[in-house]
Each structure stands twice: as C-alpha cells, then as structure tokens.
Image (tube, rainbow, N blue to C red; front, side, top):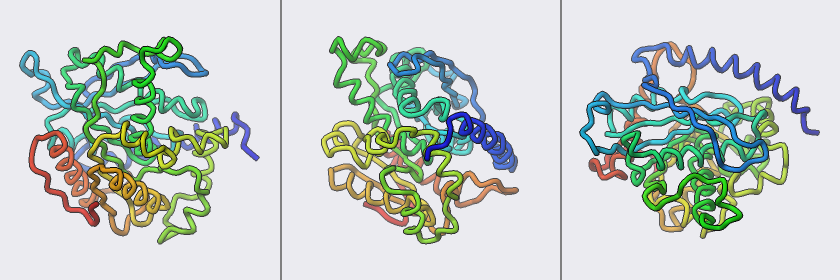
Length: 347
C-alpha cells in the first residue's frame, strides 16, 4: 500500500538533511569542487497540474567567459543532478563541473529542478525541458551556443538526459498547434535547442522492472542501494503506478521512432559494475547502437551506484580519470579535439 504523502515528505526532509552532511564531507577534500559563479532564477511556463513554479539555473563558467569577445558563443553542458528525484541539489556535481571547466571550452549549467514528493512526475521532466528552452531562447544574453548543447546527468539525472529530450521533442512537434503551444516560450527557429551529445552516468531507464528483481540480478546485491531508499524514491516520484510505463519515465519504453528523432547521434554511458541498474543501462545502450547512434559504453569495475559521490577524506583518483574520459568524449562531440577514451566496453 502506498505511503501517505505527508509521511513521504517527512522522510524526504530527513534524508535531505543527512544528504547535505554527506555532500559537505564529499566536497571537503582538496582540490575543492567548483562553485557556481552566478545563479539565474526562472518562472516555469510549461503546463502542469501544479501550475507554474520557479527553478534555478546555476552557472559555472571559465575565467575567459566574462572577457569573451562580442558575439562569441560557448557550447553549454546542461546537467541534471541525482537523488532519485527526491534528494540532491544542483551543486552536487561540482567536481564534474570542475573537470568540464578545465577540459572543455564550455559553460556548465546545473538545473535545480523541483523534487518529489512535493513535485511528483512529470514536474522534474517539465523543469528540464523548461531549462533547455529558456537557455536556448536567451542564448545571446548568456553567451552560449544553443546549437551546441550537451546533456549530462547522474542516476535520476541520468534518466533525465533521455526523458527530457524525449519530452522536448513532443513540444517541438506540437508547436504551432493551438492546443499544445499556448504555454510554451518562443520557439522561433533560432531559439530551438540543439542537443549534440549525451553523457549519462549510471541512469535508471526502466522503472517497469521491480527493484527487488534488479537487486537480485546484480553482481553484488549487498552493494546495491537499499530498499528503504529506492522505495522512498519510487513512491515519492511516481504516486501513480501506471506512470512507470511512460517513455518520459522509462525511456526504455520509448518507440524506436521516438528515440531516433529525439536523441542526438552521440551518446556515452558510464555504468557501475555493482549497480542494480547495470543490465538495463547496457541493454539500452545496445539498443541505441542498433538504431544507428554512436554509443560509447564504459562499465566501471568494482564500484557501486554513485561511486563518485561517496563521502571520503580523499578524492578517488578513478573518479577524475572517468570524468576526464567523459570530457574527451564531449570535446569530440563538439569538434574541439580528438577523442581519447579509456573504456572497458565500447559499442
């Protein structure tokens, strides 16, 4: 029986408090992660049952950003944090942002999307779409190139790297129809987001497979995320069981036509060997490759879900290694440099 929404809110608040402590410990060792240089708040305009809300876009920029020549546009990496759509914050991926700023000539924007259970599906996905549309529509103001956008995300955010472009494509396909375009921002041709690549870290892509089944099938079930977490996440985000079948929840359920049209040609997966999500991530990567996408698949050996976010007194050298690998992938997708990726598997 689903848990009362009020109790879910209390549980979520408690774990958010503990997560902040864990994030502080994770960020403590040197070198310190990057912090946002500025924050931009927007009011959402996409239609939803709860009406409009506010979300924050947290900008991480290079030293040369403010001294850019007039008319110069930077590629933009739009990032979605993890936390089961229930926990986490847009600053959780500061070390990933640091790697991007060091290795890629790009602006990094992390999206503070609204969380469940206060804002259940589809709010997070709507917020992600809204962020892309807003950035593209205001690309001149921000000095970014809306034709060179890369999506990255971790765990639930990894899910959003697929579900957000799938949802975005439905808006683009429906623009110009009176019934569906009334709540959209300006979709002039020059303002359409163009996603050129996706970097997805240990994403969940199929909510239809029971968590217990995923856990039992994993290589190290004792290393998987415990049920008290996954139950909280799933009940908070998906109060309606039938929503699990939606392609905007489970991108593995999207049709081939949807995936071909909505997703970019270049996709990278970074999966964890001891993660219950390993098999579904690998199968989804293989499917995208069969659909003609250029797919890079890395299975990171002997690590569990969220390996790069574990509280520790020192920075794990493997984390930086894989972050640099992903940066090389992004540079290749953007045409910045030749790709040099050290991966355990490639498709």
